[in-house]
Amino acid sequence: MDRTNSPPAAAMNEDIAGAAQVVLAGGLLDREAIDSVVLQSSSEHLWDLLYWANRIRIANFGNSIKVCSIVPGRLGGCSQDCRFCSQSARYKTSVEGSRVFSDEEILSAAAKAKQSGVGNLGIVYSGRAVDDDELERVERLVGQIRNDYGLEVCASLGTITADQAHRLARAGVSKYNHNLETSERHFGNVVGTHEYTDRVATIRAVRAAGLGICAGGIFGIGESDSDRVDMAIELRGLEADTVPMNFLHPIEGTPMGDFETMAPMEVLRVIAIYRFILPTTNLKVAGGRSLNLRDMQSWIFYAGATGILSGDYLTTAGRAVVADMQMLKDLGLEAQA
Ligand code: SF4
Image: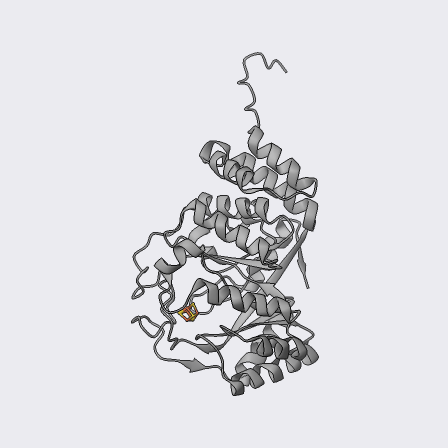
């Protein structure tokens, strides 16, 4: 075929390709290299970023995708003021008061997860912390779910002490979820009732107890690229095993209820930047997936994601597990049990 008149192929962006080669060789990017990738990842070079993020994902994870589901232990009525959250008692939203889910409801969620091929169930309590009775209940339920359904069980119970973290580890909890939400710099614009350092302390207690760390944050809450990078570097230092990436689902009644959702390509860009910074960490796309990505949901893996939260979220509807499993099959990816 005569290609004389074909337009020249666009060259790969050298900064992004160079950074990717460092990561593919097992290295970690320093702040300067990360900032350069972020700077170059504007619309023109976004495809390069995605291409290399996908290569990094495949090199470290192959075709394996981790699928988890969550069930509330307690929903709503929270004393804290996280400005994106409908569970805060300070905001008038569709979540009214506090509701404790029964053992039966939690075990039924476990049965459903098992049946649909999901390997991991997280029990999530709203609120700053849990009391001793609540912790005992979680310990008991974790044992029961592991024995009866063979699922990995994670917990998200707010701030915990070193002693509570050890108890959860002994009860068989795989990972403890506690998000940083955003950078230390931006945190005060999002949460006023507790400190960023409280969150870091809980994550350190989790690690010290030998529990896996599931810690990430939320995007689309007025943060800058620099805030996103700061959080990723902090999570790298804390040795997070899984980083849940939530994208704001604006909820009426919360202070962020009138925020705009993120553009789908911007969501993919954030995931890809995280894949460059955290090459071997499970990046789990969680809340706000359907709303922010619309038709682009299956692209998250090409951007470097290796995990999804499937089924309903805590206060918003998610996508049916069966649809997510079909998506993975169609992409030639394998759900990791
Ligand atoms: S994110 Fe957690 S701590 Fe913050 S308001 Fe919501 S339930 Fe409470």
